Length: 158
Image (cartoon, rainbow, N blue to C red):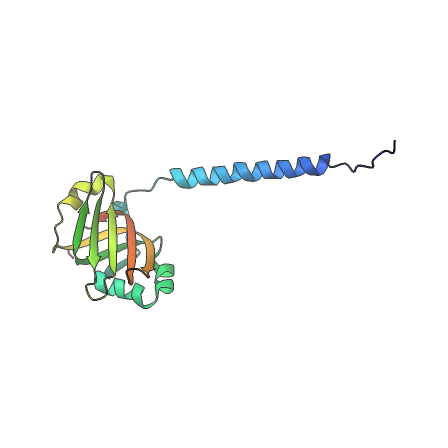
C-alpha cells in the first residue's frame, strides 16, 4: 500500500471558520443595532430645511439623484395643502399631491402624534416636519413618490 501524501488543511480551515464566525457575529450585531435604534421625538428636532410642497416635489422631479442626496435622512418641514389623508388603526398618512404630474410627498405619522394627524382634513394648509426617506420614480405611475417617516405637525404658521 502506497501512503497518500496529504497536506495539512487543519490550520487554514480553522482560520477560515474563525473568520467566518466573526463576520456572522459582527453582521448580527450591526443588524440588531439598526433594527432596535431609537429616535428622539421629531417635534423636538430643528429642521435642516423648510420648503413649500410644490417646489419640493418639482425639485425631485427635475433631478431625483441630486434631491435624494440633498434631503435623504434629513429633518424637513414641508408646508402645503393636504391633498389626501389615509387613516388606519395604528398609522396615519397625509399626502401633498402635484395634480399636474401625479407626483406626491407622503408623510407617515408617529404613534404619539397620531391624534393631531387625524384632526387634519383634505384642503387644510399645514406644515409637517419629518425625516425624509427619499424619493423614487415609478415607471408604472409615471410619477415621483417622496416618503417621510416619524412625522409630526409643525405648530408654526404655514
